Amino acid sequence: MSEQHTADGSGEADLDVAIVGAGFSGLYMLHRLRGLGLSARVFEKADDVGGTWYWNRYPGARCDSESHIYCYSFSDALLDEWEWSERYPEQPEVLRYLRYAADHLDLRRDVEFETEVTSAVFEEDSGTWTVSTDDGSQVSARFFVTAVGCLSKPYLPDFDGLESFEGEWYHTGRWPHDPVDFDGKRVAVVGTGASGIQAIPEIADDAGHLTVFQRTPNYAVPARNRPLTPAEYDEIRERYDEIWAQSRDSGFGMPFDTAAPTAADLSTEAVREVLEPRWQEGGFRFLLAFEDLLINEETNRKVSEFIRSKIRETVDDPEVAATLVPTDHPYASKRPPLHTDYYETYNRDHVRLVSVRESPIEELTPEGIRTADEHHAFDTVVFATGFDAMTGTLFDMDIEGKDGTHLEEKWADGPRTYLGLAVHDFPNMFTITGPQSPSVLTNMPVSIEQHVEWIADCIEYMEREDLRVVEPTEAAEEEWVAHSNEVADQTLYSEADSWYRGENIPGKPRIFTPYAGGLDLYRQQCAEVAANDYEGFDLG
Ligand code: N01
Image (cartoon, rainbow, N blue to C red; front, side, top):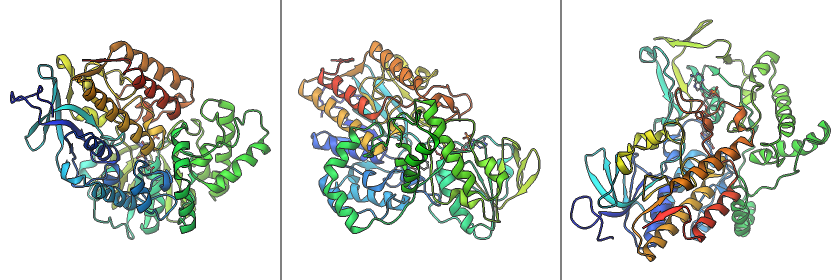
């Protein structure tokens, strides 16, 4: 522990590192810092580990990344001992995994549960962070690391009359721990993003009647979940080194090959020949069929049309199918969901689709939802309306850097970071999977491990060189923001209104927030910065 830094004049900071969040990121950060002999503590709002997998317990919640790559790769022991049961892990299984990892690595003793960070202030005199929590305590730390995830602040639209609704209502991102009883009830689901698309078929199984309120139709691809056989699992274990190497060296953090460079010059028949097997295989392997999907309009048009044809084939009623077919944005320019029987659900007699584009929601009433055209009575309303992504939770922590600069003010026109990892005017602060890093465009654990390892290496370097302060220069930050915007502009991401661009939150700046240059390119850049003695950072 440093002897020079203090917020209380005692001569020592309480901790080397204060970490916020006990999900995949915070747990690994803690483990890694302990390995360096540093003192670290995690502050976690929930009463258990798990992060996103603690909160998102809605029916059907399941990871869209395949289970064998949705885990830590850093520990052979964890890889050897843990066995996933299905191709995609269900929420309770991911939560069990993170609990198991926390216990196996003996992490809980350094996690303060049910403790929300209410502010974090950089003290220029001592060069430490003062972190305040909702129990009224304060702690000083040399470094402040946010491990709060990208989708942790649920967004509930400001519907008139919500407080008057006399039934029950839920948000998918804050689901209760006790099961919700939909049996025979009249249920509404508002929202058809990845969460809604997973929840809708499951809720339909129990509900007496289900009405889905859709704003933007989505392109959902079948997940084709199934149990993993022991033989398959043995083969995965044998190939793990290769699987992780390929994942780290890929654009999306997944070890799947593309089938062809482009569809632009292929006939419709040839495109089908590539896509049909991938459709049957299911999952993100479909997304990766053509290398230029997100940069070539013609490829994207052909792939989008293939999915539209599948929706029309699946949904019996042509009018319902037409409402479900997306036409206003290219495939994958919004986060592409996977599904299990989503489109099939609309063939069930007790399921109805309402387009809020044609018939906007005007208000909630004591009995249900009134749209421009009619009143719908409900016992239960489920809001699958998403998150104030990437920045919402960071702003809620009221982070204050040098000269009283608040992060929210600094980012009023959009996030400004260096490598998505650090921010000028906020010394000794690191943001795991922060804005302008690949994060949500990739298989998250692979991106998380890279960030955690980079941060730990940087802190280790500082210890070795007896350095106390690390802060990106304004010029390096400026360059990274420009580069991040430039790569995003070369893609089709700008052709959709999406949470990637803050469009789902009224008043939020419209800026593409994740880094779109690919994980492989991003890793190279981070490695070069480190190899060049943390080029772009002021160290002192
Ligand atoms: O949220 P979303 P989500 N009136 O923002 C609609 C990750 N995730 O929770 O598209 C009516 O995608 C909104 O409509 P529109 C994944 O990264 C991962 O589903 O904005 N509708 C949209 O349909 C994902 O992308 C997994 O026009 C309104 C929906 O609500 C991210 O989390 C599973 C509305 C919100 O969709 C967020 O997904 C689930 C309004 N006023 C999620 N406001 C796995 O890997 C919003 N909507 C398992």
